[in-house]
Length: 545
Image (cartoon, one colour):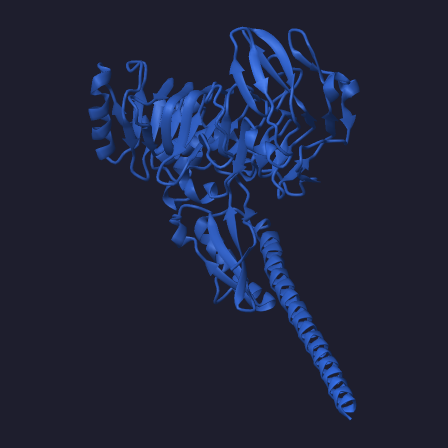
């Protein structure tokens, strides 16, 4: 009798256990089904929000690129706003919000074609958004690195941003350098890019893997000559991470350097091309040769004359107080010896001759204001910029650290050669996030960079428009980068090298040439940027908040 009772209890217990397990399985299944449904709805909601924002950006871009460049006021009429006009139509058509944040960015609306909009769409309790910048700035500012001619990347650079090659691009895992007038080459890694980088290659793509001496990318004699038999067509190699490759579909807006220089001189003289009352004067002056134009506008400037360089700081302060742009003839001032230069927003500093910028003492030389140099420019030591600089001659940047001032940077455009050398030479403390050159550096000519002993970290960009002449010690034109990845030192007879012993992913931290693109320049530099006769749309990253 007792055994029958135990059996009944055991059966009931077993049934109860299986019943609980069954309920649990059913509950979990219902929960998972509900979770999957919510997740599907969440993904669908995100997709719809992203689609709405992207379609709005695409339609805005198509419209802006067809607009004539007339006046900043007309641009606002062409675009409308959130209440009426084209922007209002976009908001209704795509169910997005378009916020005009131009004024928040401190942009002078009646003098600039720059406009900034935030386009957003709801995604559950979050928002998907993108900032877009409408500007008439030239195209080179959109890229971290590039040339209208060829681009050559020798060695282990790290590039965070897009690359533009107007013609061919060459990528190798060797770095060329010159030591005591003798040419050398050292094997290293291929370059690395960020995962979002895009290579816009409009010509052919060539790669060469030195392969521990199995191939030789260069023959070295009196110059570095490419062995094209060891270069493979359409076979670029990158270390760990490389860019996606596209053809550039948008029209490249070049810098007309000579026109831009004259336009900025007229702006410095208070002759605005968009001022209806000064249009006739502007048109007659802009067509003159540079020297004739300069003679015509010089009376509009506050001219600085000093016989003793020690009198320069006082003379500059007096000229700044006049409110006029400043004209300095450096034939009587062999050295620009000031601790800082702060101009008013509409003032320019025009240097009639060569200019050397170098800090005195341990503090950086601080420059706030736009500069035109009608000779050569040399920058050395520690200099902090909030400036746009135009150089009619050559520019040499060496043994220097260029930082930003007031959270901004320098945009430096030189008509002649651009030389960047001996920057943090033999420094073996690496950081891809800490720049030592903050700004955009452009040359209307060719450029070659040696970052084998140097350590160059640019936050901004580097662009060589290029020409048909050949870069010294090479067989190429455009932009050439030579850089080692790892530690280097000078042993007295040559350079010594130590490659990093880390994973491929970590190796980018040891790049001796780093460039990280900065889109904020379109907003920060305002009136100082080169004038282009076409509008473009610059799109920032998609954000989910």
